[in-house]
Image 1 (tube, rainbow, N blue to C red):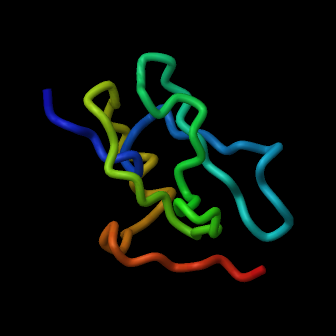
Image 2: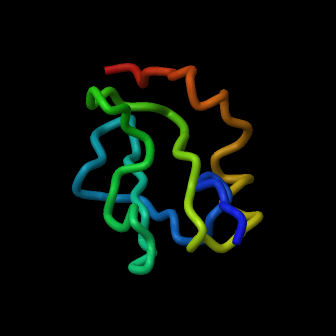
Length: 84
């Protein structure tokens, strides 16, 4: 199976508890995924990102609406910090 990037996956959903004013946290909602419940727009250091940057998994399902919602993303190695 090929990987579906998280930015294009139908299981990505807003996490209202982790979100803050001016920034929306997104989590994986696929119970079959190794990323289930993980925040997808946070760096390893805990920095908030404006975009979902995770590479995805083999359990994902493509959803073109998700790709439009998040827009074009920068490469994984480049992070864009959200304003605090």
